Image (tube, one colour):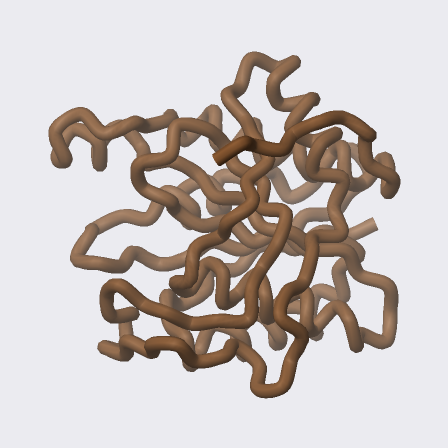
Amino acid sequence: MKALVTGFDPFGGDEVNPSSLAVGKLKKRIGSLAVHTVELPTSYARSAEVLRAAIAKAKPDIVLCVGQAGGRTELCLERVAINIQDARIRDNDGKQPIDKPVVADGPAAHFTTLPIKACVAAMRKAGLPAAVSNTAGTFVCNHIFYALMDIAASHPAPMRGGFLHIPYVPEQAARLGGAPSMSVSDIVRGIEIILEVSASRESDLHTAEGRIS
């Protein structure tokens, strides 16, 4: 079995992106799972094509895209990607789409096909703060999550996919006056757990992970 894990390059004037830092430290093999990685540009126009090329090359069974969500306190596995681009800031190409679809005439949303509740339970058991999230935002993270699931929907071979949002790393938090953060090693361990659980099961746990607000 093969997995493809992606991170993003730095954006918004930052010098690092914890997603690419963590993805770059992943083992090439986790048990029987071969792990391939790629860095995606933080670009609405270019990220999906880089992802599509990486999928064509790796031919993965599982794809996990990882992105930074500054201010979050947990490893957040996203449940749903929505078909909208609404950028609060410009991407790395200087583009700022507002109220534009990711895929013209595409469905309003795509849901992850990874066992996210089982993954969250396993991360918590390992002592890592983790949660199911119901919003991937409207920046390039949501864009690539939606694009991934759109690719998977028409892919000739079965391929499951999902998206993980991660907090800042401590060096970022220090510059930002004490924002929530997580070590790169903990983020790496969280990604490994997600891959291990996703490789071992397709059905998810039937447990409550919804939020009131």
